[in-house]
Every structure is written in C-alpha cells, then in structure tokens.
Image (cartoon, helix red, strand yellow):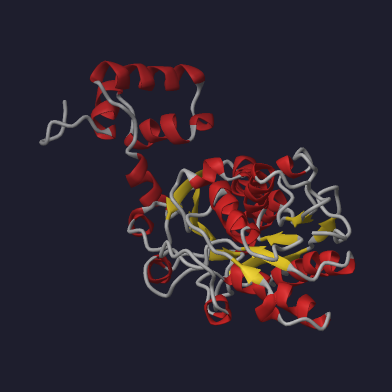
Length: 354
C-alpha cells in the first residue's frame, strides 16, 4: 500500500516486508545494525515498490546538520575555477572537506540571495562582506563563519596575511635596486568598472581590504625612502585579470618619463604587465623591473621568472575550513599566515638610460 498522497513511504515498505519502520530506516541509514539478508530483503522490496530512498533535505533537517560547508567569494562562480590563487584556496578547503566527508557548496557574490537558501553548516567567506546581503543572512541563520582576507567581523573566525607587510617588502626591493620612478598596477578598487588613474583619496577608500592594505604597504616603503607617494604612477583597469594588467601597464608605460619598475598587486596582473612590456619591445629586467604578489605556480615559469610576494593559498584554505569545523569559526584566535618576497629574474638594477 501507499499513503493517501500516493507516495511510497518507509511505513509502506515496512508493511510489505513485515518489519518495523525503524528497521527500514536502518537499512538506509545504519546498515551495520541489520544482517545482510534482512537489509537485502528491505532494499529489494523498496525497489519493487518504486521507492527512491529517504528525502535528503528531510534527513538533514531531522539531524540538524547538513554535512556541507559553503564558500562565498566576491566574483562570479567561474572565477573559482579560473583564477590560479582561488583554485589553490578552494583546493585547500576541499581537502579538509574530503577528510571530514563533507560536501562543498560554492556561493558566488557576497550580496547573492543564494546564501539565504544554501543548505550548509557553516560558511568560509573568501571576500569582504558588506553589512547587507550575505552577512545579514549568515547572522540571521546563526551560521558559524570564517572571514578569509577581508576585514575581521565580531563573532567570526579570521584567516589572512599581512598584506601591508608583503607589499612593503615588494616596494622596498625595487627601491633598494635604485628605482625611483615606480608604477603600480592595482587590482580594481571596487566593482564599478571604473578605469583611470585613481587619486590617493580613491586609493584610501578602495572597496577591498586587501587592495587598501597593499596600497598602504607600497606607500610606507616609498615614503620611508624619502619619496612622495603622489609622484608614483597608478593606473586602474577593470575587470580583474591578465588583460586588465596589460592595459594598466600599457597606460603606465605610455607616460613620459616612463616608470622603470612596476608593482603589480597580483601575479595575474603582473603577467599582463609582462605582456605589455613585450608588446613595446622592452626588456625585463633591463628596461623594466616587475614585481607580482601571490606566487602562483605560473610565476616561476614566466619568462622572465617573476619576482613576487609568496602567500600560502592552499594552507589558507585548509586553515579556514579546519577553523570552521573544529571551533565553529566563532571562538578561534585569528590566524595570520606568513608572506615571503621571492626574488627571481624579473627585477634588476635601475637602467642607466631609461
């Protein structure tokens, strides 16, 4: 028999086999509690009756646990599969999920309504969370969460790096090589699509925490060397990616006098900078020194190999997911992972006749 709605239920199968409803439930959820013969009888009857198995949503609601972690980030979902740094980060998160037998749910955009309906036990926020949108939803649902790279929030765990110190080391490196005409290829300062030479005021109020901190680090080193930050050339292009880096660098290199060193806020932007230099026939590092930030795998394989600031993307993902699982994200001490300046062949002394 089926119930009044025409659905086959656990009770239907129990009646057909002559066992209790709990026995049928154990056949699906706790097979170790049944003999092999009894479980086979129950599952065979279920197949004959057309039963597809327990409703996974109902099961998770009954347990009060979804067995899944969510990851929210600022960009479209495809970014997580195309950006090398994001790929490494998600790989770190997924390694922890695999070990804990958890699913991983990707939630694009911090203001996306997807966060409201995503069935997850906690969220890793790989982005800057505005007060509205996802953050409000997370608090409303009382989900534990961990912020990665964005500014800390009360009640959340935090994993990141000292962006300012990493950027300061990159700028100090080219200054120590004698460069005084320095250009900056930033990541987009917000999501408006704005392009141009951002003023120091725009730099200071950039939407993204990491961008603000890297600007501050560059500025620290430049001013410590006795130079005026306002004299440094900055060109912003959007959207984020290698082509934006190429166009930004091309605008910098069209200036007269042109920069002899360029600080790029990511290795993808630095790769675009190398493209722009090649298009203009400039030798790197003979005519132009280039420094990136991230040390993604392709940085060491670039021609020339890229000087960059290394940060542990894979470990960042692991630590964030582990923090969320072990301590619910809320009671954890902040984790600051190390950065390291990796000097390769894309930087050299200031040219004598630039």
